[in-house]
Image (cartoon, rainbow, N blue to C red; front, side, top):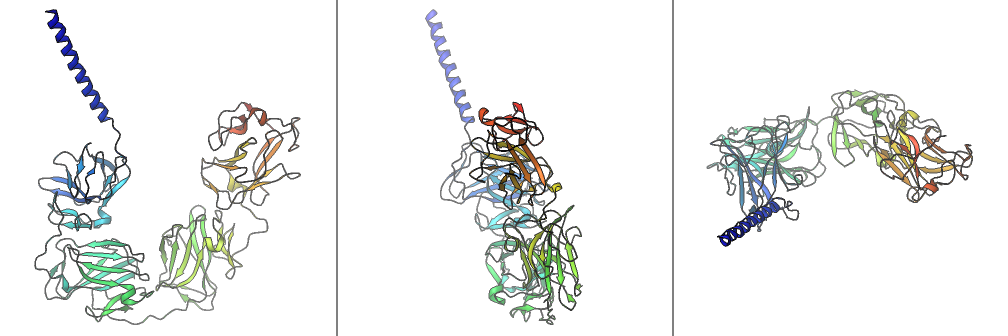
Length: 636
């Protein structure tokens, strides 16, 4: 009996050990970190359905490659029309998609934790297991068009399957290759691009399609693609199902109506292609080929087929939206000689940016259609103002500003910026380039400006006081930003041991430009400028900026000698902050031994505690980091 009981104990123990090992192994698997070395390229969001009866929403992922891809822990992030983001699905571990295979995730299977709209704006992002790196993204407003939705049983789908642009389809193809909607019996060759306008007041671009046939035609699924001056191709319109063009009729698609998702230039190279729902080319327009390199149409004009529908492309002086094309009367060309950019301000307090132009001629000049073009620090160019039907008199200054809601974009007083005056054909009247005309990393202070000195005729320079709408004036000799501009800037830590450095701190609420601020050592008698901070150097609120001997400056700072460090305005006349380590007898004699506080003996630096606002102490060195509590308070 005892042997049987002992044997039972052995069996029970072995079984218990097996259960423990199984649980332990399972726990280890659950704790495995998500994969980080998987190549997800070729994995795409392929089809998205926001309404399939009976009330099912789903997302289809497609593997376009010839290899199986492990998608364990890959996530789907949804951003709704209000911009609220949340993860709505995480792929279970051990899940793969075979080569050329599909994975459908749906609400009906309770995999998607939230539904998808077939009518509202939304963004669906496929992200790597880290939860932030995007693999692919669908943006309804950008990829399909604002306010465009799909019908019940339809979807948003890539056409052609896996590689194409997004389109609306009437019949979804869940878990299978996407197909463009079939439009049996429709002859798309009767459609032509008939007129294209890149600039119609107030700010509208449009494309006109013409139906040459004697029958109404359903253009549902027809696409328009744009190729910009950089060769980038993007779909800017897909016709909703049921969109009709009457026999011998016109259909105009415009930016102001929200149908075209991108604008069209009237002065740069642009290509427009009209495509069938299957992506076949019906008609094309190419500015450089059909009109001419550097050709442009005027404000209120267009590129048009002359004669209407069947002719070659030409420049029309008068756009004929939804009407038969005509050449129109040539506009009277304006002589803009004498119009100049005279002053540009990137920060007039409290928050105004403006551009000043001047008429140096002896006649009034009508500025209608003249544009102000801004090029930002990334090289992105856009029109920020178009003059209405208005003239500028001889000797008159005209200021266009952000606070008056004329300029549609601000101007930086610290970053690279280009400003150009251009007529509607794209020809430049006058231009300003910060890097070219002022200098790289140059800037103007708040309430200063970039101005022509002498006024009207001179070269561009940076001045400290703007002269908005009046004659430009040079800065007085030796002028410098006021001490008030540098409020919040302090010396924060100074180290005379190895490595020697001076650390600054911004305790204010605004970024401070440190251009040409002087770090001066040991006063005026035997002292010298330790370092002049380079142009374009800034310090953000709550930030530290450190300047190191042997890297930024060549002069020394001694931890065993008396020391005076002054932070001075660029003209050297204003003291922003000061630090003193007196001589051991409490006198202000600099660069002599021994000092009142010997940093060499202790191996300590001199620093404020707490940063920016505290008193000075002997403390452990904390280069480029927050200061720690000090041991001995420094006084002078």
